[in-house]
Image (cartoon, rainbow, N blue to C red; front, side, top):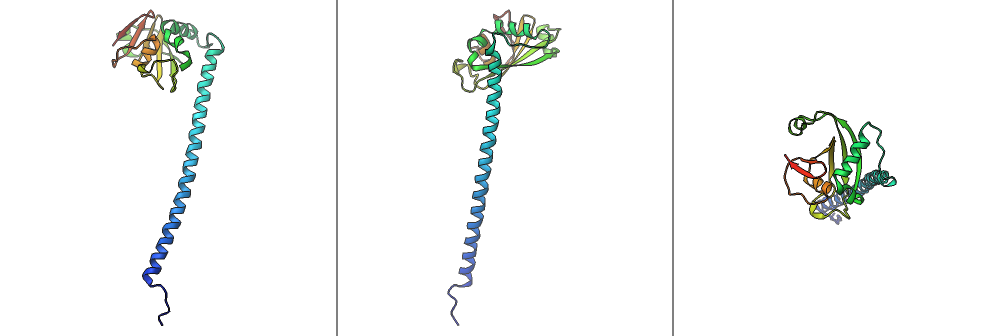
Length: 186
């Protein structure tokens, strides 16, 4: 009665091999669907981001001056452009957003003497810069510009470089642009 062609051990090994193949196919399908889903989400997010940036840029380029509704914002933006010639020089690589009017922070009161509210503008630097020099290290930065009377507060070194249109020595401090010329570092 030796008509069994395969031993029990061989049958178990065959079943285990089939189980591994089935599990492998399952995971392959799962990862394939997971990667496709993530790629679609990333494309969708990228598309929405690019549309937002394109809209922002369109608002700047359709007219010479964007229109702000909040009191004093238009004047503050005009001053920002005069204080930061780099924003005009590199306009192809930047888009902007008005972030509102705020009360000065403690350091602004103590260091700058600001007592009144300031206007904040966010400037988005392109990830594929065409005109901003690479040594500014500004690619992909979001720059916060706070405008108060005839002064502009800039937090990051790459943003100060873009603002003034020239490379600023690297320091880890705020930059205060006064009358569109001087840079004071804190």
